[in-house]
Amino acid sequence: MRRREFLGLIGAAAWPPAVSAQQGRMQRVAVLTYFNANDSAGQFFLAAFKRRLIELGWTDGQNVTMTYKFTDGSPENVQIAAGELVGTAPDVICAASNVSVGPLLQATKTIPIIFTQVSDPVGSGFVTSLARPGGNLTGFQGYEPAIGGKWLELLRQIAPAVRRVAVIHNPNISANVAFLHAAENAAISLEVTVTAAEVGGAADIERILTGFAQEPNGGVIVTPSPVTNAKDKRELIVALADRLSLPAIYPSRLSATSGELISYVYDTVTQWQGAATYVDRILRGAKPSELPVQAPTKYEMIVNLKTAKALGLTIPESFLLRADKVIE
Image (cartoon, rainbow, N blue to C red; front, side, top):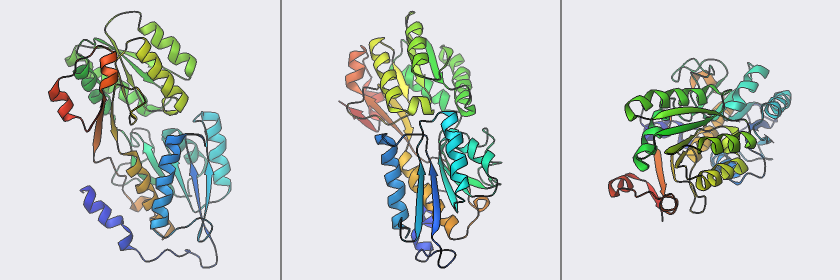
């Protein structure tokens, strides 16, 4: 199904004005995030989610009560937050990222869960299939496993001298492991050696990248996880890659001042807006098993020419023409 057709099906025009499913009772929506309350990027996504709910007729304090749990993505904090949210018996839970979904599924098999930014939900064991998710959850898939090979291909194109690539990943997230394997498979034809760089925190990142940079012609693939998505860890990776002259590709959107070399990403805002639309469907009586998991329909490539120059890279005009955005 094409995205335009899909949006037509789930758009507000297909539904009457929002009312409480049970007259006289406020609907309850809970949100479990991988970011903390001070994360500007996370708050930007959450704002898009709230706006879409309002457009669909759901206003916090009027006909719906919103409850948020902010975490730093650590398994312990997410586990606690998931249990607390389930304990409030919401009508539906929106869960962001792989690290949030697992604990929620352990805590409830009945409360509807709508996920967003979840990579490889089938391989992660969250849903049976994209078309027929089964169980009590569905949502919006992030990166597919094969994206690991695409990231490697783009990194080699923008930095042809790279012959060794460290894949920064969390081994406890099955989707991260899938990205690593995809990169390893693609490395054969690209004549690149891939190194598995397992990270759990800032200390791991600095130790691994500093050691990896001791030999020449290195590059880095950063996979999405609570560790690499956190603002302070993102900034640390960028600073190290710059200082150690390591071309790197990132799974997050670049800003003019961020300093990353290149990113290849899906539209995260659209994911959160879609999640709000699915929450609306659930509040109106739909079941998660009736709503297919939606995959990204468009990826965006962003290149930072200032960073490329600092790394001594000359990017072909043909490559820049393929970019959706070039930061001068």
